[in-house]
Image 1 (cartoon, one colour):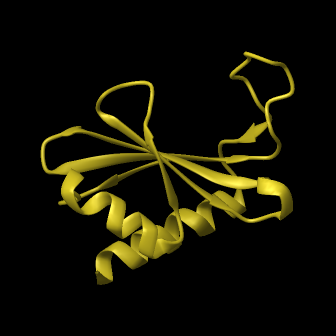
Image 2: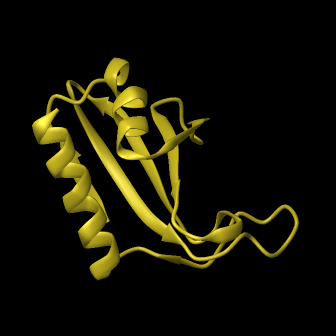
Length: 102
């Protein structure tokens, strides 16, 4: 699920995402991406995984999915994840509401 965040700049992203409950994992696969997770289960999964992309000027693009479990195969990147649905809709609304009031 993707959402555009207006006026969300790289300098404020880590602090804002931490206040929402996310942990920064560092850079994503691309230099413009930062990776964040918010664990909602025991043992690290399930968890929300958000990639925030900062090549949109003063806006950012947040791409979020729900990782259901850890990658099963060594060296594999594929995992069981939900990319839409009511849980993700609630989480994106929670993020948007927080950032609008920040």
